[in-house]
Every structure is written in structure tokens, then in C-alpha cells.
Length: 122
Image (cartoon, rainbow, N blue to C red; front, side, top):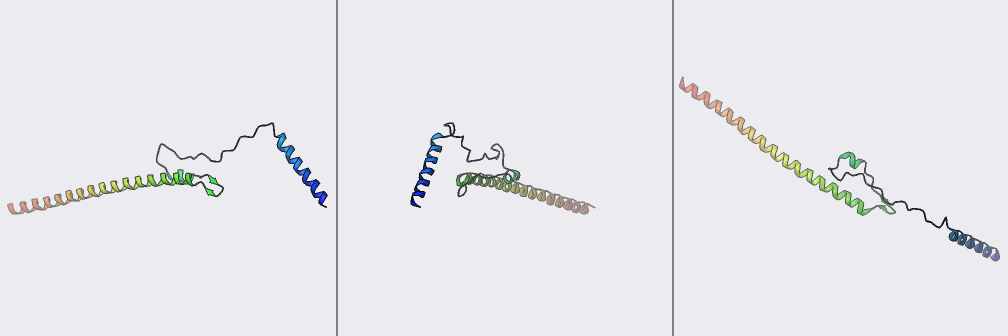
């Protein structure tokens, strides 16, 4: 039994050695890219469809941390910009509404005062 296992081991080692030394035309095949290109637009803000279509590259132990962090940082920055713009527009709208209320109040008071003045003149 020992001699059989020893001969089998020698045959396997010889076959592997021949396979490695013979190679396949002496050229290694091109390596497959381990990352996929993102489809995020660099020249405009992200839309919901951009985020829905996003597929982050996966590594052996899950998502690539640097790629995922980059996407999340960009999303956070764009959301912060949008929140600031929304707050700015809401403040401008509140100011415009206050001015409109003031103008309506002044107009009503002006009509009331004008009506009182006409009543006194009669």
C-alpha cells in the first residue's frame, strides 16, 4: 500500500510539474477588472434613479469600504446642500408671506380709516 501511494504521489507531482512548465502559449490571460465603473454623474446632482441604479463593487469580505465611503460622503454632501437650500427658500418664503400679511393689514386698516373719515365728514 505504501508503494502504491508513493507512486501515485510521484505521478501527480510529475503531471502538475509538466502542466506548469508547458504553460499555455507562455502568456498569462488578461486579468479581469475587480471593480466596476460607477454610473454616477460627476457633473450634476444625484437623482433618485442614480442611487437606485447604483451597484457598489463587492470584495471578498463584503463591499469595498473606500468605494462605499466615497459614495456615502458624496450623498451626504449633496443632501446637506439641498437641506441648506431648502432652509434658505423656506426663510425667504416666510419673509414674503410676512410682507404680504403686512401689506394686507395695512390695506385693511387704510380702508377702515378712510371709511371712518368719510363718516365723520358727512
